[in-house]
Image (cartoon, rainbow, N blue to C red; front, side):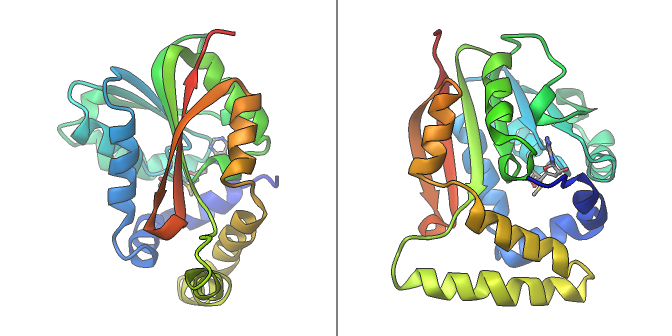
Length: 228
Ligand SMILES: C[S@@+](CC[C@H](N)C(=O)[O-])C[C@H]1O[C@@H](n2cnc3c(N)ncnc32)[C@H](O)[C@@H]1O
């Protein structure tokens, strides 16, 4: 995987608005769904937290939860800090700079970990999954949300056309054509469904369930840390 941090530093300014535009406003609901999959957890580590949108959904939907948001991109974290810093939820979210492959936390530190649209961007997804497992307490859950290519034979060609051609074209208006072309290329190349489940299981996360959203353009994988 390429080093993607400079890409996210570049895209940070338009990140939230482009997401909402391209997902027709569904992205907030997807993140809320991910948060609800981890309900019952008191401490959550949100990896690749970016502008903090998942962390915010967790605090809004899971009562009393404490969230640590981690991301290597200074540009994305700066936006998260500005958004969260002055809000009434600021005492429930802490932000820290770091990478999924080398989490700066001791073993068994969190009830749950999440990563939304981030595992595909790490340089070593298998190492990142092992790290997620390491910082989870036994029985804790990992919620991983990632884009996928839908399998429906009518929807798939339409979606691929949109993904390959329309999305980078619209993003070019904001000066982010290459970054959104990367989104399309990397999603098609990244393991999904059975392929990703296998990767999670090899990293010691037993996959409990998968949830397909919007005809399978987004998938949430929920894994559990079992004691080995
Ligand atoms: C597409 S954004 C997702 C942000 C956020 N989770 C959301 O739902 O909007 C991907 C994020 O992954 C981060 N990232 C890139 N490489 C990473 C790594 N090795 N470890 C952790 N995060 C990484 C980027 O900086 C970026 O903020």
